[in-house]
Length: 74
Image 1 (tube, rainbow, N blue to C red):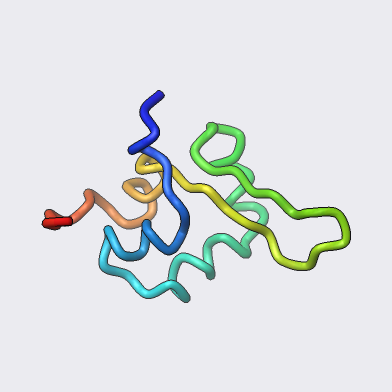
Image 2: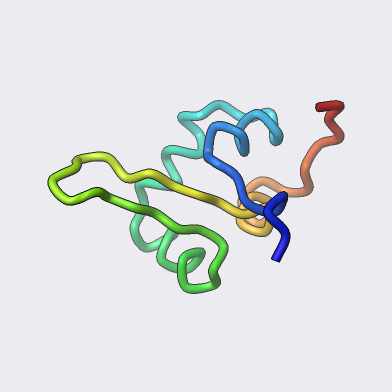
């Protein structure tokens, strides 16, 4: 496991050059995300009493959803 293979949704959107609303749409679909969670490609956390999940996503999930990562200089 390499830490560079996991990121916040904000970083993922930056790296793939997509809008945060685009990824948020997928993150809100339980059936879609269950597949990625079961594969170990995504993880969410909802604090007790909270209303908003925090997500960590993997390069594998992003490639599956949006294709190969564009070349970026960051």
